[in-house]
Length: 354
Image 1 (cartoon, rainbow, N blue to C red):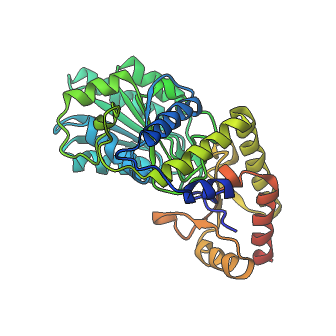
Image 2: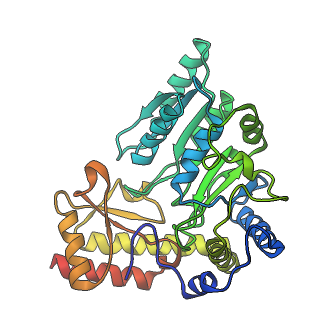
């Protein structure tokens, strides 16, 4: 049993859709129609009027492409973070010759609103405003769900466009997409499709800024995806598109509110079972995501993960970076966001801890 926070377990119907004979994405109008229908369905999941595009490439493509498309050399970018992926945005900015200013809180703290406001105010006073701000909705390595609205309020006050990594929250909990200029998702998390596709909801303001830039890459560039009525920027991943279409259809058929409630119930059950085992949630239950739970197991996480896999045939995930051996993560997202599956995974952990 796979119970990781991405890539997630894939339902049989999604696997079957991927295994079907596919139209040629370069010449067959049937593929273009499928792609258009997928983008329209994803707009419903995003709950947005923004354009939605689906480039071929794993979710990290979206993070890099957002920076490559929007950041010109010398542009100042405010990178807001309390986790590994939030910090990583600064690396992308610097790799494209932008100037990243990282406002980073400890990984088990909320985003630092006071520091964010002070940094925005100082930039305005100095006459060096930010061209862009980046942040993460759900920090998958720690299971932290960030409250974006107060930050978005500040960015709107200072007229700073936003890029948000919602890869492990989109489809599992509401995302304020219409307040975000580029909102990023991916196929392999709450959608429970195979890895291989990035999704992005892009505002008119973001498109305009991309048109003003001169990206140095085709692949890490959203602009060629703005209009694919004549052709795609490169040969698309037709089988992955078919799988994601099936996955999104399943999600919309269930209904988004029911999907969100299912994720909340699964998360609550996971944390109840963890409390019974004397485990502490990282960062805490109030700020933990409905899509992933991280338990603190200082110095033991890797060994316990290995034993759970070998003895109970359940695959979990540890933390990343400095927290690799201190956190054990349960991915109750997408197809695995069911109380019965949570119990199966927690039973496995309980057996090993005993």
